[in-house]
Image (cartoon, rainbow, N blue to C red; front, side):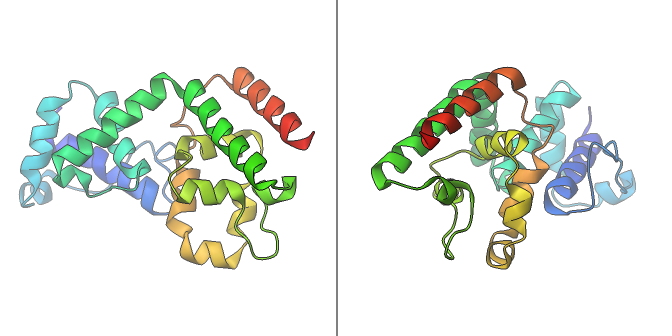
Length: 203
């Protein structure tokens, strides 16, 4: 690992999360960029430092993913924030089922407290944002939970059809979509948990 390789990983992950067309899995991380151009960058020392810190490709990729996933693409220039994002990402990965269950409990508490009808949880009704989206935007539900729910109960594509949200929250919806394949979980177990949740809110 050297600074140039770290920089190329950074470019690939950045393009993946900030553009619609580039998919790091389909493109296999291939990006343009020469070592000569990298050596002319004023911030190359940051990537040299990161290359020394991370021993393998997987770890540095996860570091960049964590920061773009949590909407902090410039965090590498502030190492404290970048490390917090990375540590939080690792913590969630290690206990993804628990965090998912906790988020569903938060959603259920909101539903019961506000006597929310089922359709209002996932859909735009009378110009109102879906409850699930509101809780995510307010930081009460993590982005990984939205990614998982969209896997088992597709909602993001329909949200993108709403012009008001696609205009204001386009970057947020892209981040959720682009997390596909980065958020790993036990699909059978998660589907059972979510099915039980749906049955509970419908009853």
